Amino acid sequence: MTSESIKACCADLYASDLARLALGDSFHPGGLELTQRLGLLLGLGGESRVLDLASGRGASALHLARRFGCQVVSVDYSIASVGAAREAAERDGLTSRLHFQVGDAEDLAAFANASFDAVLCECAFCTFPDKPAAMREIARVLRPGGRLGLSDLIRHGPLPADLQGLLAWIACIGDALPIEGYVAHCEAAGLVVEQVQEEDDALAELVREIRGRLFGAHLLVSLKHLELPGIDWPRVTRMARRAERAVQEGILGYALIVATKP
Image 1 (spheres, rainbow, N blue to C red):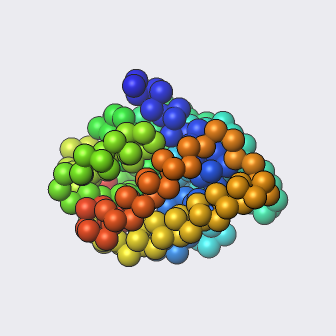
Image 2 (image 1 turned 90 degrees about the horizontal axis):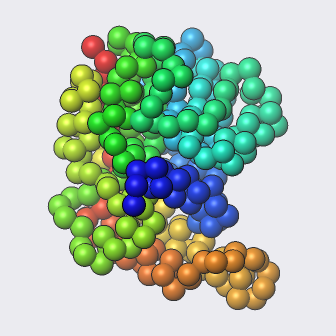
């Protein structure tokens, strides 16, 4: 599978009806509560210019603009997600503080050096095929003293073979790293890691919610009250069940990382 096809797969998955059903409005563990905590750790305020990478349908960007009054530029690979985010900003009357565009986190050529006070990347860095390139771009667009707020899946040791297979199927979380891996990418790009906070409970709660939502969706589909064509329900159910067990066993977790550009 090429890097471009992996990016397209991830973008399509997170723009899909199934993803919205399973994950709700905010597509990462901890939801907007953890987004707000990252905003506080980044020191955001009314004068801040923020880049939100892999922003999806814009839930985090909308929340940051409302809560901190900052300017947010959001980039996502999915044309459909960017369109939905723009519509949400218009509905909320936040278009003066928000800008959404289609783009690739590994190539931010549209932005000048040192053009952002902060970069936010939630539950997405693990999906980037070329992580060194993405981190170099993050470091480039940050101003000196600017901060990166990264939240992502982490793994403790090797993944079991059956879980690797399931993760390879969805492509988007098949490359979760140990905390040390994320830290190493930051440091290799010249960033200084200031804080690491483990948030495994947030991931466990999200996985439980996903299983419940998938059960409800499957029931509605069976009763013909909902249409979700083309979904392999047994495979999806096994994936959710196995992921929950991996979290319970401490194989998968979640963490917040804050790094600064000297």
